[in-house]
Image (cartoon, rainbow, N blue to C red):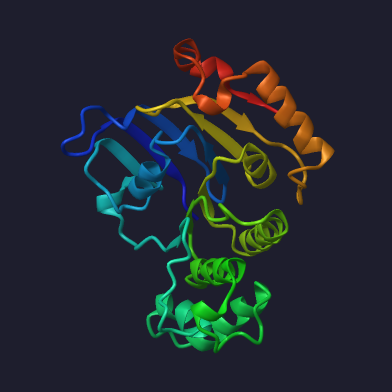
Length: 263
């Protein structure tokens, strides 16, 4: 199980005129599903890259189970899912899923099991070009869970999908998460999506990003993003904080600690 502590003083890219992250702090409990919501360009993808160890050029520290990333005695099993499926076009569905298993003994069995769990049974030998966009995302979802991740990083994985397809993929995601219970960092621009999947939603300011509000979502699962419970929370949030999705005001940033509450 993975616990995460993020304490970033400053993150700036070489040649940039301003910081992308500044005084950004948050904790994630073992097996907790966290969604990040914030304006475009706020640094949400940067947070995922830092949490996954893909980018270590930062002032501050990221602790996994109270140890810095550089001092981990056991490799962290990461699962990744990006805005694009990033499938290998020359590999079949099964081989794309097996790709991350690196010759494990049960690789073929594990790949086929997950392909059926995401409802692609019968398409094992198809190539990505033969699949719809939604089907390609299902392959990416199966691949992300194939390694039995302890930390899952998801960067707007269902963006640009039609509503029924995105809804079904979220349902499959939640089923796989309930089975393995990895710690999840999930980036989205869709507040309803965040409220429907997350244990806690972290709202970010505009760049340089910092936490302006945290919201614990104590609704039973499964959750319908357009059902009454989520709709009520969604409406109340936007009524109380009309500029929440644009990062709140400067005054809101300064009062981030006061904004934390449970639902």
